[in-house]
Length: 142
Image (tube, rainbow, N blue to C red):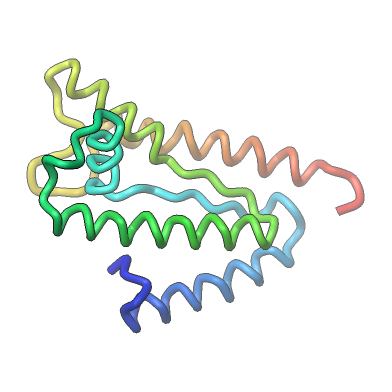
């Protein structure tokens, strides 16, 4: 799904770029981009942070590297268009690390949607994005 070389993903990304350009034409601060990382991406980040990526399956690493490339393109698009952008990756990876240290789970066994701590990480990041959007909206002359 995140492979920019696939026609489906390339078409969806092209649609995203078109929508983002339209959003950028709106009053500043009206639209921002919040990236919610996949479960795999969060796990990858924790493994990378602890120098444990060598223990991960090559298919897993390749899949997440494709997600990283897509994230980069999304961030670059937001920057080019002047749209506020935040990724919940760091906050969610911190929540995963906290859960591990507490002997808890951040994600159910067979689901990519997190438990409460994951949504709290998303919300904190969304709040930071909202703050940035509010500041941009209040700037004179825009």
